[in-house]
Image (cartoon, rainbow, N blue to C red):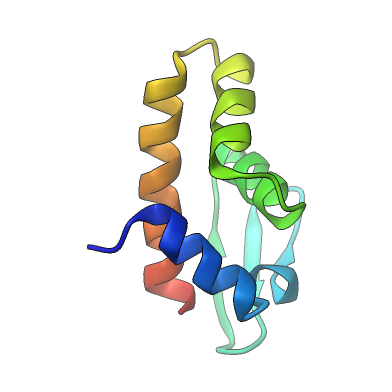
Length: 90
C-alpha cells in the first residue's frame, strides 16, 4: 500500500480534489467518473482542509483539536481516509 502522503500528492497533482463537487451535507460528486459518494461530517471537514492545501499533519492536528483526540489517532484515521480517496478517485 502506498503511503497516504504519496496518494494525496498524486490526487493533488492530477487536480482531482479541486474538481470534486462537495455539499455541506456530505454529498460528494466526481464529475470525471459520474460517481457520487456520501461523507460523514468528519470526512467533509478533512476533505475541505485537504482541498485548501493543508498538509496531512496540519489536517490531523485540526481534527484532533475539533474531536478531542490525540494527534496520532487523528493522523491514523486521516491516512485511512486518504487511502480511500485514492482508491475511489484515482
